[in-house]
Amino acid sequence: MTPVVLTIAGSDSGGGAGIQADLKTMAAFDVFGTSAITAITAQDTCGVHRVDVLPTDAVRAQIRAVLQDFSVAAIKIGMLATADIAVAVTEELAGYSGPIVLDPVMVATSGDRLLTPDAESAIRTLMSQCAVVTPNVPEAVVLAGTADDSTIAQWARASAVPVLLTGGDADGDDVVDRLLGGGHNREWRGPRTPGGPFHGTGCTLSSAIACGLAKNQLLADATHNAIEWVRKQITAAETLGQGSRVLRHR
Image 1 (cartoon, rainbow, N blue to C red):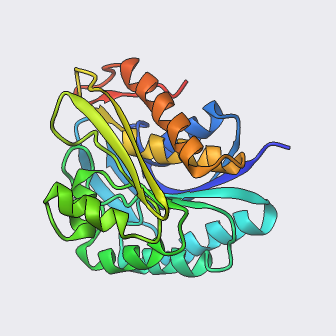
Image 2: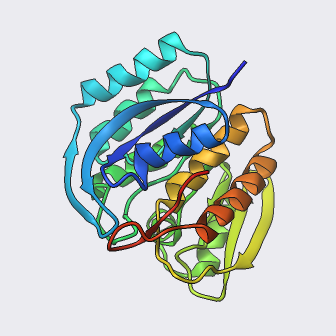
């Protein structure tokens, strides 16, 4: 039977990130993607031009509709936008026993803020329900409360929930992704692909991990497979707009 995966995230009108990237990734991994949209962004490869947050009741209704009808094998969470939505999602998933992958979307590649500051504490509460959290460098700085890399790594190692510190936003010739905490201590290192920035890599990576978990892969294996696949997508990225290059998810 085809596994069903639910993505709870924002919509990207440019098609490179958010719900659109999630569903494309799920199709590529041969799982059935379902969705609950939290916000509608007017977004393209150059930036985020407008954000319209959906009513909390509408977000709750979407999640309930999917969970009542489908046997959801894994959930990916992306942009939550506000504290109210973060709390609502936490409450709606309180009884869910499957793996949850949290991509704590706070800042877009373009630098645009996608999470209100008052929602950060709600995100930390939601983390406790997750199988893995996948912050990039700016998000890890917020969650750990420091910009010092060694202290961030120490925070991740001390976490009861596994943390995948993604290295795409870091400096250096190599991209280093580190899975720490929750009994994990593993690193993936690869040469940085020139020609960036690339749009939607975080959404794509977290969705790919959720797909692996939906197929009953161990977290380390699902993470490894997702990282390798995203690297291929980055290598094949195209310049279709006037800003960041986009992945093709195939």
